Length: 463
Image (tube, rainbow, N blue to C red; front, side, top):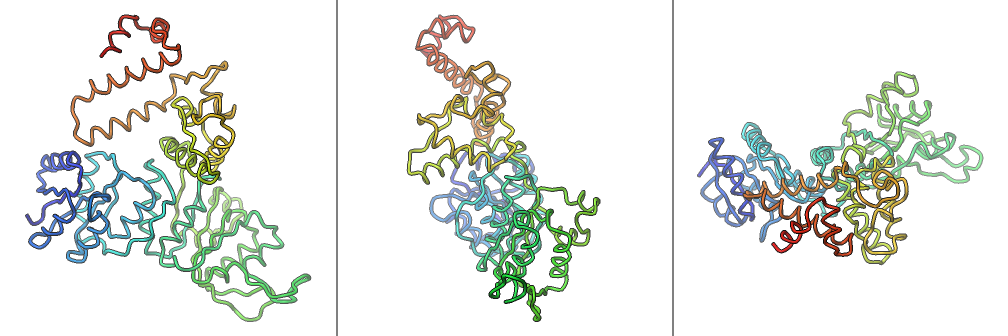
């Protein structure tokens, strides 16, 4: 049927959930379990909106989007995926997606996206998919917004200001912006303006001619020249000295600059991306940062959330960093016990993602067993979970609740029913198994620790 919402997913339960939701909204729909079947249908029909999974047997969702837009470039596409990483989001937008919907998703939110897509026709034009190399991980809503922004900026060379606390991954995002930009084939040059002495920073940025000052035995290209045709990333821009702020503003204003001691103007053919952990607006008010330069840099702003605002990403990031460290060291990957993971989720990580990565590397080296327990963690991490020396996790910790919520969302999105009985039985089984493990399989002691009768424990174990 023409003007229907097409749903492409090899998971029948996902199609069923979306079809029921669209029926309630009186929106016509049609489901497909393979992209090939949908491509055949394009010969006779044109969908109003398409919801498609990325990873399916045969032709994947991104290839389908490209081929759809060859025939019907105005069709909005909402890409669904359980792989909530940067490349999935950018690939979706590069392929011409209208929006990106990570699984498990909220069904009303999916319906709202469909209505937005219906109102926004015609949609985007397809582009080539970038090389697939995972860069940044994150399932938290705040990180999904960052992924979307990088995807939408993939056709632009606009100046970007990245803000966020130290260790949140600002340079990683800057590299992603470059990699997914029209300047991707040019160089990416990074410089930390706070790490270079003031008297050397000007020469680092703009270069110098031979004999320009004592010790300048030969001409030297600066970072602006090194980044020709690519991206120049200025980290900790808030610490740039006032006189260099003036020079940088002049470059951004007229696009030209001089080497130190030079007579010929050089053209700055670079994209500028800056980053800071400081409040630039406050520094402007204090007279420490030029207001006109601030407005030049603040064309597009991306805020990276601290890790404490995306605690649900800690299990995903910890597994990734443990795998990475094991691969670098050539050893078997360590795993986190539920109690150790609970401690990590509770810890505020003042050093953010960088601190978590360093911690995982330390654990890979220092933990004697393959399974990381709370007592293997540094004292400052395990203290909130192990008061008075105990290794039992605090009942106030939300880590297990986060995991339970994710599992419930996943099961609800598949259309499963009778979840209470299933999850209740699984919850009891975990309680009994762990209590028996802690008491050396002594049932009476395990029952007492759990606050149930021994007969109750025995009867339930038999089930």
